[in-house]
Image 1 (cartoon, rainbow, N blue to C red):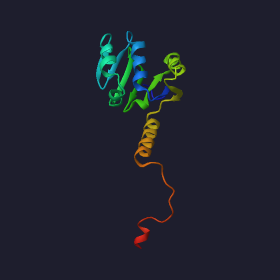
Image 2: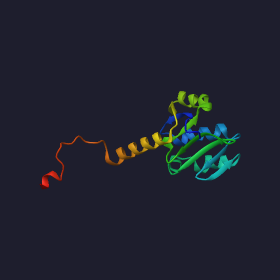
Image 3: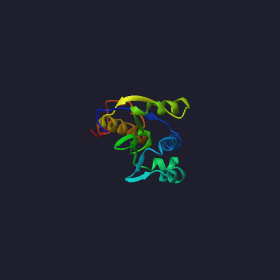
Image 4: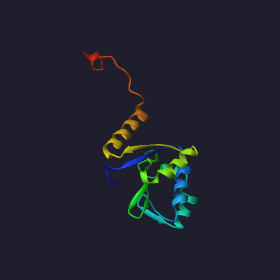
Length: 142
């Protein structure tokens, strides 16, 4: 993907419902790459039956839905990073209208995505930063 490309950032917790709808809607015209393995045509039925669960999807590192050489949906690291190409906006709007997801347009910039992921991860591990006084634990030693 071109780092300056505008994409639709997708927000959902219903990963299997959203990914399942993507796979069903685009099955006959795309290839799907999951952690380096490629699936096409009837093999996408196998994905829908055997892989398309929240547990499996959240265990996936790399997910791409490709039309030819163009990735139209994807995520890296976790499905909370799911995005869609702007060309697929009508389909994404239909899923939003059903209440499956929310989305917004953004410029895809890898370093900003990484920074935001790090910020979220730190908050998840350590919680929100606390306000502290000027004294630290080391000050008490002196």
